[in-house]
Image (cartoon, rainbow, N blue to C red; front, side):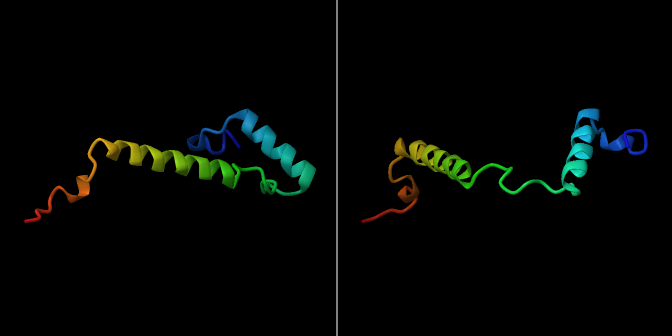
Length: 70
């Protein structure tokens, strides 16, 4: 595979893991639940929103600066 598709730059370890998975399960599909959990993604999004909110605290009402009230 490495010689046949050099542009893919596969590592031997990756191919060995793939072959092992196919031998054990009969498929190359990932096991259910093997990715990041939804909770970890939620924590990432909370951190992003918190950072955005914190960056706006110094400019309170910043979105209203362009409006003039008489």
